[in-house]
Image (cartoon, rainbow, N blue to C red):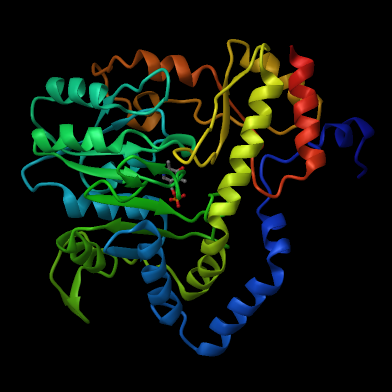
Length: 378
Ligand SMILES: *Cc1c(COP(=O)(O)O)cnc(C)c1O
């Protein structure tokens, strides 16, 4: 079998992301960390994990960090730990990849949706307040997603939640390091979920996640639930427990990478700023990621001509993606006949968003190639 020239001409020149480039750049430090774990004989819940929990808590400015096996597990265990017993619904946005919806289902709750603001594509105090008023009192927890790296107005949303006696969980999987007026993403809600999936801003070499919380009672419950619901070894005190551990190798990798995070987030913002400028006046309105409140996890634009723009960029050797094409309430698995929430901004955005490559290891050549393609669109 041979590859045709037309096929090879279609292979993207600028990848959407490239976890391998980060690993190559950090090879010596990573190899040292992996070797340390290899020789220690501790492979789960050992010294690396304990040190990472402490270091990440200090970085976030929270009392407790609990390592778990993924961001989705972090959401599920957080929901199980903060939601009042009498409540059965979780309120969230429907434009954030269905992770909170999946976690809500797994935790035994019914998802319920609020619309997002056109200017931020995130929940706001206004949209949460409206949805809570419509919900009939079943909502026990709101999940706010800091989407694409942008810090949502978590403090104002928390004030609304408190008035309604509802808990708040922050989904920080895309926003590690984002700084809002009340503190870093993850330090505002009753609990926060982080993912260390290999393409996130703080990335492991596999799956990983964490729950952050200032509440010691919530921390205790998450610690129990991540390990079978044990109160101590072999004594199951809570139902709904799981086996969800962040292993030593991933913790050691994260300890190498946490000190690099701020500089890399800055680099991501610079890349978005260049794409905003290059795309100005054209058919793709690239959303800004200015200042410490946005860590540019994704570089997202809005366009009425997504298929055409995507095809042109692809022809130019630039990989793109859509985050996310199907809102949660329209996902085949989650459709509830007769229950069609009205989420006009969510649906408007889902048909227009388009993501460009954006990762700190992009070369100057990569960036210029994307800039040229964006300018050519105008
Ligand atoms: C990636 C992501 C998650 C899920 O994290 P996993 O580690 O893949 O389970 C949750 N929420 C958001 C917003 C994400 O981007």
